[in-house]
Length: 430
Image 1: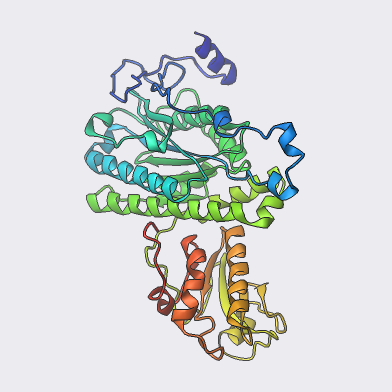
Image 2: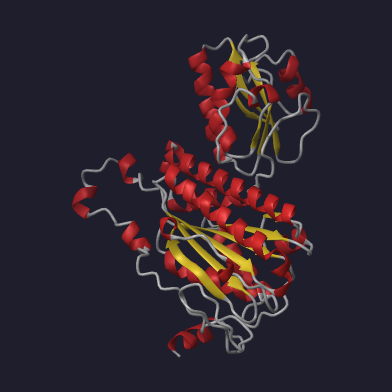
């Protein structure tokens, strides 16, 4: 009753009975009709708390820590929360959903291996109006198992608002006093039709408040107006899928690729001096920009040979000379169409970005590409369209230049010429 009283005090909604579950992931059917305070949680004695993961620096240690080192602990844990529709309409893609979730778990496992500095935790919450439950809750990824057919039984209706409100609030309570962030993925094939405790406006306010704290929310849907539903909830990144074997496989592959790209950006960002110098609010605001342009839908991100026009958040990336004389080729086109400034040899200018190649040593060129990479990770909302930088009058070859852009390409929002793509050492996970 104490938990129920707590929820009554938090949400002034009707106090209805709700479904419960066993902690081992085995579903137990109930007569209840909505989510809420009676949901039981899996037993996870092995799960360390965020406080255990992030012990504060002792006072006697602080005195001997330089300012740069004092801000070293910008690598917070990632709490991956997957809110998975288990209503009856998902029964036709039951096996594909299980295998797709397992692919996502494997992707997170790979990320944890490649980036051990950022600890990865996972929650999977299945929801309908008869048996909503956690399969995992805040479990370290290395302690998770693959899902089986016994874990997922589509049935009943779609209390979407209750599922989002309940699980996100629980996760917020767990990590709100830490530097950790939540990455929340909502997967559904139907409109909200059964919530009792949460409504549209309360969910929107919750999502809005957490995006300001660096959380990322994505929405994946079928058989509904996905864009309108996602934007209506305040979610910037969304993806539609078809409820077929091929459609489900493609969706989960895009989701896996996007999650890996997000991790690449976050890991790189945490190592930049600019990010380390930021205050906590600034860092969270920057992490929050990753809500836009999150999904990486292309396995081969190839820029056109001739870029004639750009979308609102696309950036034309061209090679310049060290004097910034944009007299020909892509540089001149950037001046005429995308706001490049004659005399400015490097950096953002209008809807273009210049990288000095002609007249630079190769080492200088490498440093300029590193500065570009820093800019890309600081602006995840943009998409960068590269020309064949350095392969004209500067005299370099794609084999020399392409590998310099490998890191930027791994962020998912950089497109390269095909000649570069063929020379890059592809990240096997992106």
